[in-house]
Image 1: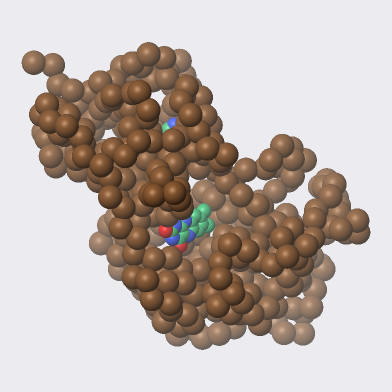
Image 2: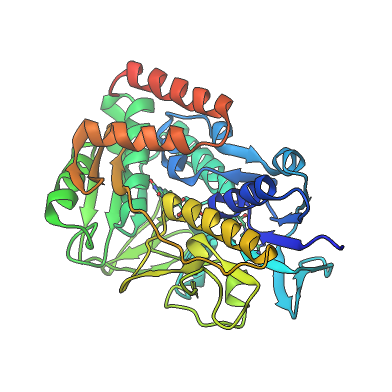
Length: 389
Ligand SMILES: Cc1cc2nc3c(=O)[nH]c(=O)nc-3n(C[C@H](O)[C@H](O)[C@H](O)COP(=O)(O)OP(=O)(O)OC[C@H]3O[C@@H](n4cnc5c(N)ncnc54)[C@H](O)[C@@H]3O)c2cc1C
């Protein structure tokens, strides 16, 4: 009998969890992972790379050895589109599948602002982190007055801004820090607008204590490499850090199936696309409704969906019915670079240093390899004992 061919598009939290469990569940499946990147990135700790607390290499899991361990083929290419029961890759190569898992994640959304896209520094991928790090160091070494303009006051904007402020404090002597500004520009009346005051306000205060300026009800206008307009005032010597929003990756957008406003593919209770028996969508590129609410983009849900999809594919292969996905929400935290975080863990409010402890414990626990866990914990302890800059 021919082996069932499962193609997983995207080697992030959802895709890798699914692939690993599929291999554990059956040695007979022919597994293929498609991803243009040679490594999977642990995104929640990217701001700590900018802050100078963790080395970037600790956050990268090479996909080739991961696939070799799981006896899967690794195809280092972007998936372009689906045609019938085939994936068409960027090179034109075609991969036939019996089961398809779409787990290609999300990427920064520029809402049609091409000028911003050209010059912006998002903080989403490993390459983004390396680029922003180089830019920040160049700016610090030059010593010239400079503003980091962080567009978007959601949690990633706050994390990026406080990480930059932390790095500047660590690298620049107090008498020269006045040359550098970090400013969050947010259109809404307050940052972290969707969170209750008891979490949003202390997080905002912690950012201000680090020297971050917060401009709410503010709008960026025209941008060019030389100048940025904020509320009608133009200024130069700036770095535009883009945290204004994310949308599902382009590959998800090219699948002919209903999507939500962020381009996330709507999935049924068992994570399959409506009307498709053999196509699952997981993680940030999928919109799974838990009751009325769509699950937020988070590591725990991506991994949980990866587990549920693997279980359902294995059931389908055995001729059994699929089961609905039942998400478990362990909580969420908004970290700030000064070793503090606010949010809820198991339904209970936590804040300050205890919040940061939970956040980093989650990150270390979720990291794939023991060596990286030890490395991250070591980097964090070293950064902690260096003390506040
Ligand atoms: C700065 C930052 C901080 C965050 N902090 C937290 C946090 O504290 N807690 C938390 O729970 N979540 C956090 N998140 C969100 C979390 O990282 C995501 O929810 C999670 O990574 C989603 O997992 P995923 O598997 O869906 O996608 P990803 O992990 O993004 O993986 C998607 C994969 O698909 C690949 N891919 C993309 N396009 C294609 C294509 N066309 N063909 C093939 N492969 C493709 C990509 O290369 C990537 O490897 C944070 C995110 C960011 C950016």
